[in-house]
Image (tube, rainbow, N blue to C red; front, side, top):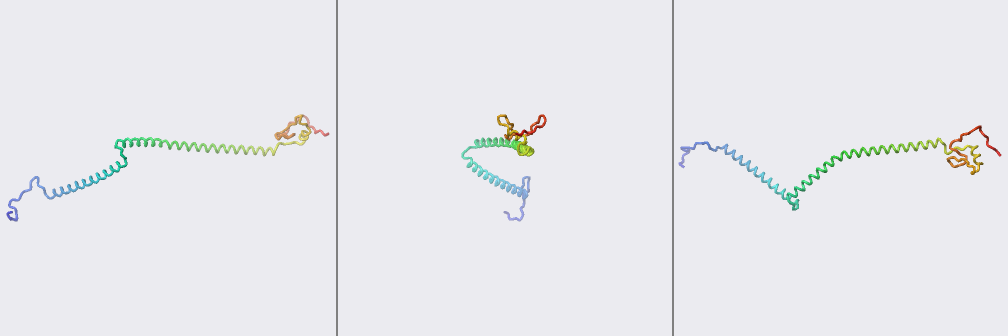
Length: 176
């Protein structure tokens, strides 16, 4: 307070002297620390809200009970996942078996159709019924049933599915 414009013996900067750059660096460090504290406080508040929500959802259960429930759920999930891994192979086997069943059913139905066609073709070749020959029919008509008239598949006298074998020379039907 001497009123001088210049200090007669100004202090010289020493080893621990703080200059403007050091002061600005300290201010920047302080601002970064303040921002980190605010971010940590926001995270803490978010965790408090999450905890309050979890406690409300837990319906009075404590953390140990929730840990046991979580372990049971994880075990059930692992079992379901391993069971589902076998489901793909089982589905493929089922598809193969269904294909085989369909193929065999179609083969059986085709065989039934072929058998029916053969039967109808055989019946068409054989004619509409058993063959009757007039000479045998007349003779059979004269033969009394007691003498054992021959009957064919139709049950009529004198009709045979195939002509009988003749033995000896041909005979004429008797008249009179």
